[in-house]
Length: 158
Image (cartoon, rainbow, N blue to C red; front, side, top):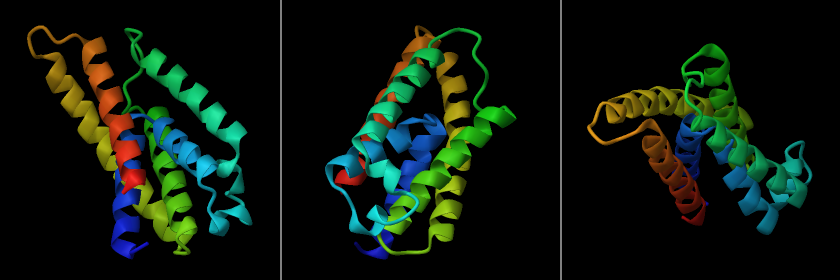
């Protein structure tokens, strides 16, 4: 794959991680469990290609999506939430770069930075949406879920 496409995939999945911490690894694991990559198969990241990992990440995503709909949940910009999203973006960045035989460190940095930016962007977009008449927080969250999932799937198909 061209380096520019690798960068776009990494930035895109990093952004998905900023919206939903578990969704980017879930999309990556689902894809890689169905399309194993030889560059990952003999690395420390090989677990991401296992069907059991795909199932676990799907369950974690369902839990995160459900938890997001509960009123009074923590903001995504508190340190623990922010760290989880950045770590998720860094992880998918490392995975994408490793799959394409590029620097894992570059993937970590790019994926993590993208997740960081998307965490704040999605937080403030969600806050703005909540101020719109007839838009409830749960509806804004559901729209965000659809955008994150659709984006993740589209990125890996490219």
